[in-house]
Length: 316
Image (cartoon, rainbow, N blue to C red; front, side, top):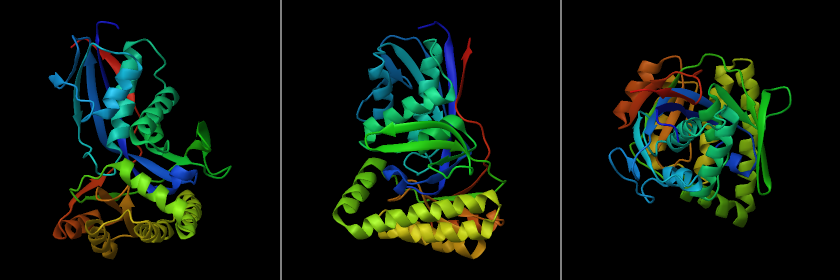
């Protein structure tokens, strides 16, 4: 590896529609947000993460990335304002940022497609099952759709795994304001994805729900293209009800969704669920923030339209 330090960052994301069903090849729509994971790497003796030894159990994504590349001497410093386990793509942002940094340091291709592919493989290995939407959004930035109809977005790459294949497209997204309501509950993605998989395999009703989520996601992409916030919000609320039936919501998420509906076009959980965060599409973000706070959530307003992963050398 070269002797210079490398700094990199990648954005978190929110899924507007399609989480869980996207794992089974259905469409989904995600937006990069202005909360980022940042890291700095430099040559070292052994693997150090923020001054201490790396724990594969506590940091499986970092361990997987370095182990696959047989990296044994590296000093890593991290910083993030994406809450872990919040449903905002913290692990995908971590993977995209660290992969960008390591690829640049080793003189490898660190373009967004290369980063997105390796980050997806990392997520898949750690979680046992995954879709490329989180990692593609962190790598590409802006708006990203998976498996959208021809003419609705600009295809940028295709990723396949096993029997599933996803076409990843860039989606022009009008300026929209979302309020994120964080429950404070950290929920691992892997077990929730596995829960839905088992439910789908054992129950035809669950398969029908996943199909319905796919259909309303396509309807939502059309609503985004014509900047129809009212219709998009209604689809978000409906999607939340379907995800609740699949068993991936919780009392805390439902409470925050219900609280935000008076001042928003619609609201739903975002990410894998089980805790984490919900999102509300709104023109009155301060009122939504107050409503979420009163129900025990941690609200913050997010800006969309941000760039994807980036890395550069530094002498400091």
